[in-house]
Amino acid sequence: MTKQEFIEAIAPYCQKYSKQYGFKVASAAIAQACLESAFGTSKKATYHNYFGLKYRPNRVTCSNGTFSDTGSEQTINGDYKPISTSWFSFANMEKGVEGYFQFINTSNYAKVKQANNPYDYLKAIKDAEYATSLNYVDNVY
Image (cartoon, rainbow, N blue to C red; front, side):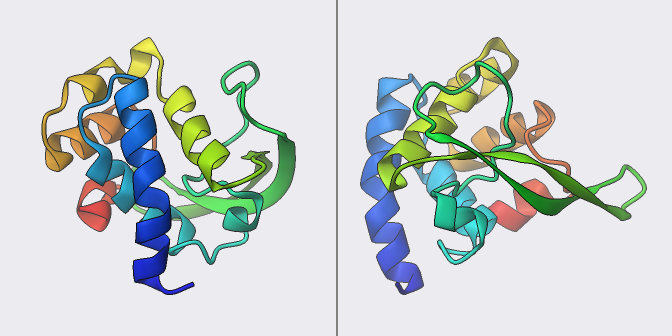
């Protein structure tokens, strides 16, 4: 699947579920999926986890289980530390996108729902500690 094909495949689901869950900006979620899954080519994407969603009990209802994998988190001083953890698994792309919106549909992400443009959406999601990368907003935007 090319990058363009990935975007064309995931965009309708991001549009559908952003609206369903009350988020105003679907394009930022599309961009997140592109970055987080390397346009659907990452190992996590084979489990339809396009957003790097770590397992949190009772957070997502459309998951079909979990899988273990490694990753990394950036520390406040800019260094990266390796992690090994459980991640959500989904049956298909649509469920993976729905799972993302379920994951961020909490009071912790209330400012994301208020965002009216991609930059404000990404800034709010970073401020809510969705990602540890110090440059997350710029990397996605």
